[in-house]
Image 1 (cartoon, helix red, strand yellow):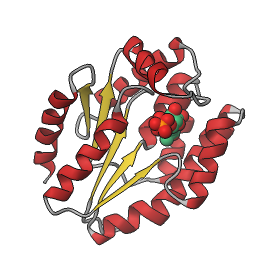
Image 2 (cartoon, rainbow, N blue to C red):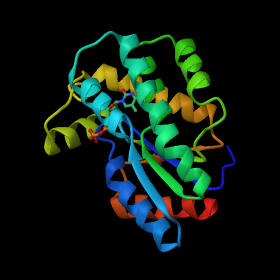
Image 3 (cartoon, rainbow, N blue to C red):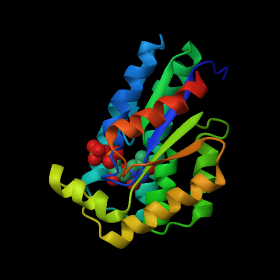
Length: 204
Ligand code: TYD
């Protein structure tokens, strides 16, 4: 694949506030003349959205869950991400493979070697150019979730599940400092946006 555009992913435990900032990043890039494609995982394609509905609401074996996440991702890459990057567009994805490491391996305990095998299979060469990891202590995330929504299957998990997800995210960030930027999401929205602008400036 000849890649000309840039691929940015947004990560963090539920309630870390990433959704608030995706719109800001999209507008920031559009104001710099970039064509932006915003998408999400699981989902991002008609088939992926059907898988999302199953993943967020049905009980299933942990390995089934991991495989469906990657099935949705495979379709997302084929239908949306790869063509957009080839056109030279900027792709913003609300979650990608780091979320599978965080939730299925960190949170639920799926053997990390299996996750690495899936990553190698589904996107052996593609990695985000930038991953923004919105990081907050558990208590803050919980408060935000309870205040704003009806909880899905993942969001109903207990605190120790999210602690393990968060730790796995931070481990991935330490392992891939070349692309993962940890954003302290306890700051005000304005302070976070200043930081995001600074990080994006370097990619432009
Ligand atoms: P989320 O991105 O938080 O969307 P919303 O803001 O609409 O709730 O929801 C997606 C959920 O799916 C989230 O709880 C994390 C989970 N997830 C995984 O467990 N593994 C994955 O690989 C991905 C992409 C998401």
